[in-house]
Length: 78
Image (cartoon, rainbow, N blue to C red; front, top):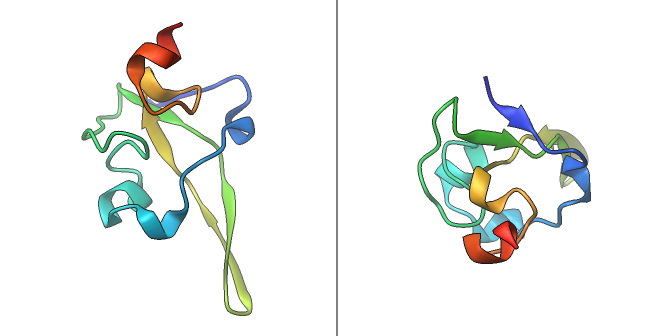
């Protein structure tokens, strides 16, 4: 099962329009694009996504190296 960060909604994400479909679906990390498996994914919490007059929830995921929202794994580990 995917784990969650302490404050997943506090992480600022890239704009959804800049992500691939796999990143948008939670199959790849929103930061580095690495493929995620159930055991390696970190749920970043539901995010509202407004499209015209409709609001839906988006459920982004990241790899464990990028749970703090940084682009490089070295920054996240520091």
